[in-house]
Image (cartoon, rainbow, N blue to C red; front, side, top):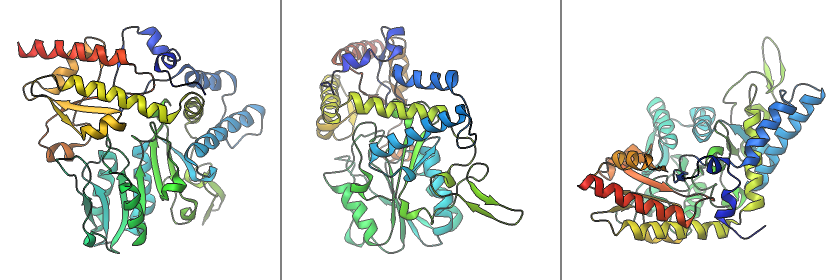
Amino acid sequence: MVKFDAKLLKKDFPIFQNKKNLVYLDNAATTQKPRSVIQSMVDFYENYNSNVHRSIHELGETSTCFFENSREIIAKFLNAENEEIIFTSGTTEGVNFIADAWARQNIEKNDYIVTTQVEHHANFLPWLRICKNSGAKLKFLELDKDTFFIKLPEANFWSDKIKLVSISASSNVLGEIWKENQLENIISAAHDIGALVLLDASQLAPYKKIDVKKLNIDFLVLSGHKMLGPTGIGILYINKSLHNKVEPYKVGGSMVQAASFNDVIWKEAPYKFEAGTPAISQAIGLGAAVKYLNENVDFKEFEKHTAYLSSMLIDGLLKIKDMKIWGNIEQIKKSGHLVSFSLPDIHAHDISGFLGGLNISVRSGHHCAQPLANMLNLQSSVRASFYIYNTVQDVEIFLDKLNETVNFFRK
């Protein structure tokens, strides 16, 4: 593996060749795709397009081989077993999968589901609905609004009425929210009282290597499009010890071992969890994306790079009058990959829209975390987020054009 070089990696992404002046800083929403990922999907449709796990002709066998090879690549990336990797459409489906196929059968009236105050709607609304339907209650790990870290829960926080802890590994608004070892301690505390743990890794997996065995989690969800893969594909990890305790989320073709007019026997995992024709080309594309990361990115060097860009960005932002940065600045400078900010006199949408006209892509809004925004009395913020192809020059251009934007609106 070569030393991490964002300028060199950028050459692998066709969009930056086709749009020479593009400064793309909306990676927390979705990342751009390298040529190898795009080509892997083109190859599927041009050379061996066929359904998987069904036909024994050459095309079907080839398609199945590439599909299952992607599962193996992703399993190794997460240090999981192949059968623990279930293909979904993304994080949202992964969370809803567990809500419907496990929580609906196991969460009862007066039970608790624990989450945090910073969650994306995808890891909050399914649990809110489960609670409303079952009579269970939500319990929140609270955010310290001064440090932007999750507060340590009181000793009496934990009880055997907590059945599930579903938390994000990193916030899509604030960045890192856990102090050192705090996430691991929360997972351990949950298991000590018999609760299961779901980790939303959609903002962590693209930036740091995750070891599901070391973390000792029960479920993990992520979205492929946030880590160079195509849209419409994601991963749900289910610890194999739970395979017989989780019902299929969908039922239909491909996941049946035997069926009669009166009964059905499901296949073993992962196939019992993957009904119907899967997103074959997308799964192959995600496998190619993970392979690209494995071959081209030293994650420790990558973290240093995004932290340097984040630090550089923060230093520039703080030179602007009345600038407010949302997140723990010290932590973002140390290991961050995104920076959210706002100005009291200019709406975030105006900033984002103006910058868009200057070929700079950032995100504005409440970032699908409206309860968090309301708690912070934050109507809207601008978010700049980095990935492997972002360079120092991108930050310099962004700061220059942001100052131009601010001056325009303040005049």
